[in-house]
Image 1 (cartoon, rainbow, N blue to C red):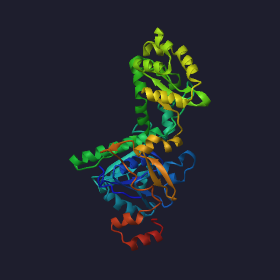
Image 2 (cartoon, rainbow, N blue to C red):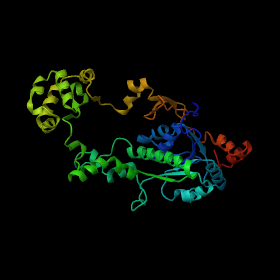
Image 3 (cartoon, helix red, strand yellow):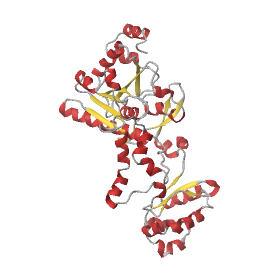
Image 4 (cartoon, helix red, strand yellow):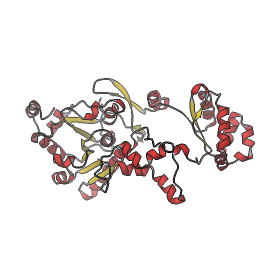
Length: 395
């Protein structure tokens, strides 16, 4: 699957990517979706992310679309020479390995910026430089130490968020920093180093909770035990064990809600006249509402909310979104082939440019699928590539 990137904003930008897992690859995916030529450099046996099982099985196909794969033995000087020639043609170099790994391979910013002064070098790390930067970080680690797990779980039971939010957002900020550095290069003529980190990203996610304490002097309570700012903003159990999330966040919505469901007595109750009063009266109001809605099917409640224009949400598992009518109707899911040939659907970036979604132009690549093509562009002949393949320097 290929389609032209000529009309996309990053067309003509070449990215050389040394990444694995989620954070670095998500940065490359964003740049690739925006039209950059992203060349993923892998070891001869491929990125280890390709072989993950369990919750990691979706990592590689999700974050490596629209990329090319070059497989090289970096321990061989001839392999390093190929990479250095490639970097000399690049606009961006992206990596997310432990501190020191790039230096040991001879691919640190100091060396590569001398080779290519216009290079934007983006590193995705656990921590920005400081007392923690020697630590090994993972998304769950920084969620625990950065307050997010505390806010997500109930009192005394910190719980990580159900997705790799720091990895993905860290990659996103890496992409934002990269685009800013490319813009600055238009003026200065030089590239620069960009750093993105898991921990600092997590701090941004909990910044409002930190500010809540700074403003009020009172620590923010974990989400399951928080005092909500909205009277009705919770999950309800309804008929047949189903669940639904209704949200009544204004006095106008309260009036519409009570009229739509025939709750005239509640609408007339002076204790529930304003949102702040409904917050105060949640102790008895919520059990009463739960009892009234418990016998109704979720679909009936949803239909009433839909007709009344009130906010609500069905409770869905991720796999159920593969046939979500809105995603299907708006092109939010795109067909894509895995390296083994199976066709799947994948979510696109959550944005539109000029009224269009950014497409899957190229399936996640097989290991070394573009080695010959990329090396030919660097001046290697077919005989050169064949010799290096025979010597197991490239694949």
